[in-house]
Length: 396
Image (cartoon, rainbow, N blue to C red; front, side, top):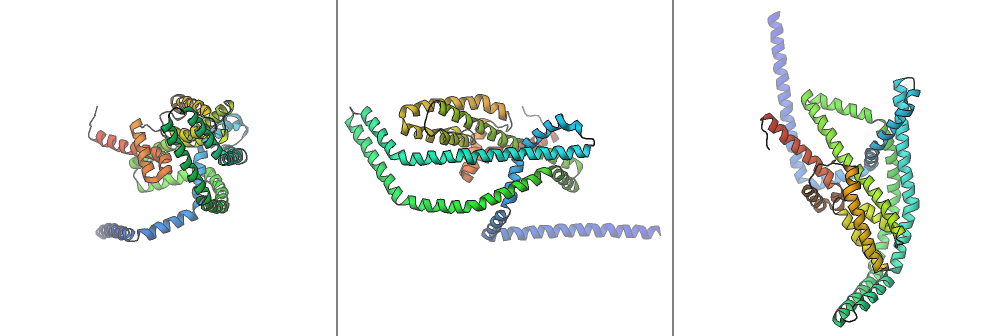
């Protein structure tokens, strides 16, 4: 009987080993086939991926909103737990209602900001832009007259400037008569397409609510998957890496958004107090471009200074001094206070990440190049330190 049991156990082990070996070979062959299919049918695959992304866009929007609002949710949950937690008799009810209150507060705050943006800021941007388009020819003429008066003694330079002005005006007139009509059609198409975008956005808000409410369940399910396929040591290491990557990426994105919002508000206050034109438009330009690390302040300051100089050269110079002071305040006081050392990159790697991201993916690459590169930098550094620790090597 014992011999028979040993034989059956041996046959079972042999069958199991053969089964897993066969499955491994099947997976390798399948991956090879998929790889060659991917190479030869890359256009078809990208088209399928684009279609899937388009279908799932509300889910993607909801995931982004939930990710950005999670710190806000955590903050308010902590406040509600501190002041109202003792009113609940059971731990289950306390967690449930505190979570509902935190998510509701975060979503409400998000909607209030959207309301302020669309009903207060957007109309002002529209009026500023319209006034700019109407006043631009006259402002250019006044600017050229001011420059001509300053350069009256230099007839050759005066002639060059006058010719440049005439060519600029001819180009502007041609653009209005020809290209502007095509641009208008694009704007109309964009407005019509905005209806779908708004619908997707509000569906995304609903999805964000579900994601935020079920965040703990998603974390638990993710841990189950990780521990199911990895041993305890590797699973713990992977979870630690994911937490650190989330800290780097989320800390930078949320911190930079808050920093840029504050800078935009301070810019609006300063420009309004200095009685400069296009205050809302300039503040939005400065705030939005400030999201881009390192180069953002300069990208926003140049067109803003030109806009104000078209109205008044002296005000343009004053604005330039003001914006330099504001950016020094942001770079040395506000930015470090909010962001701290969340990315852990030297200035060289920050510039490298911006140039690489911008070269590959344009403006989006400039926005997300630094946090993405910081995550990869952390992963590579952690792997190198792990390998050195296994070899008992210490590099000074």
